[in-house]
Amino acid sequence: MVRYALLLIAACSGANKPHVVEDARGSAVAVVPVAPPVAAPPSPVGGPYRVEAGAFAKGDAQVRVEWKDTPVAARASPGRTTCNTAKVPAVAPTTTWGIPDVIVMIDVDHGKAFMPSEQARIVIARCELAPHVLVLPPKTPVILASAADLPQRLGYAALEPARPLAIPPEQVAKTAIDKPILLPVVGHEVALMLDPDTITAIKADEDLAIVVMPPQPYYAITEANGQVVLRDVPIGTFAVMALLPARGGQAARVAHGTVTVAAGGLADVTLSL
View 1 (cartoon, rainbow, N blue to C red):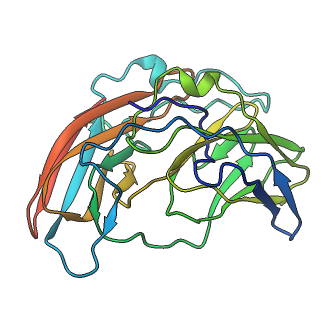
View 2 (cartoon, helix red, strand yellow; view 1 turned 30 degrees about the horizontal axis):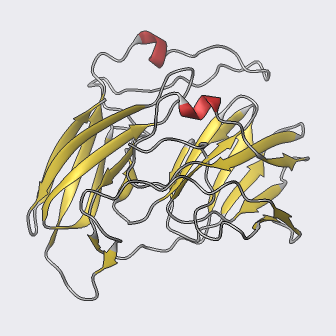
View 3 (cartoon, one colour; view 1 turned 135 degrees about the vertical axis):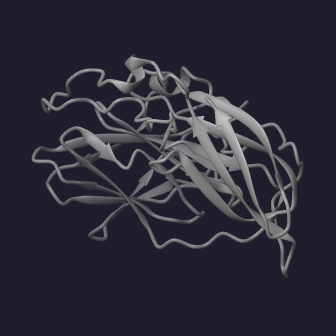
């Protein structure tokens, strides 16, 4: 199990090089990098991820994450923000206890290549960040944007590598954010370039977002129904993991399982938090 070094991401490669925070209008400043994270234990399948050059036997896998009888404390707002709005609950389960916004991963060492993404956006408005969880291909710029009436102070920091996906429950709330960012006016934007194979925490005064830039493309986020389908998974039996990040005063929760993928089929697995 990997321990957090700080939710909302940076650092692993280029440990002695400054990261760059770029203003959307073109200015750039060097930022002192955080200390490199502790090396993660090897993946159960072993070795670095290998992209298949040609066709390979594959299928799809549907992962459902549930938390039966989710406690009322996790489903209720933990209080009011300084903007006098209700804080977002830790979870929003479906009527059948499916849990959205959970990061899931199928632990494979070969398969398809990443699909590139031009950029991703996290917006702060009324003391809340949205979205709260992102899974992105390597080299994807993350834009932090303000939709708030007052200046907004944010920060971010690197956690330990994204492999395997398992974070100690207490770590996120206790980790200090060491890279400050100021969004002085409505519409102001800052672009972050995050290192691959990392988990990064982005934190406002009262809210937290998690960005995962994984080492292989079989990571995803559960949808509103608590399910997600991962496409073009190599055939075989693999470990599956799910992480519900800490939020709303609730600790993070991790679930483990296995899935067997057959050529041309749709495997199905349910993980319980």
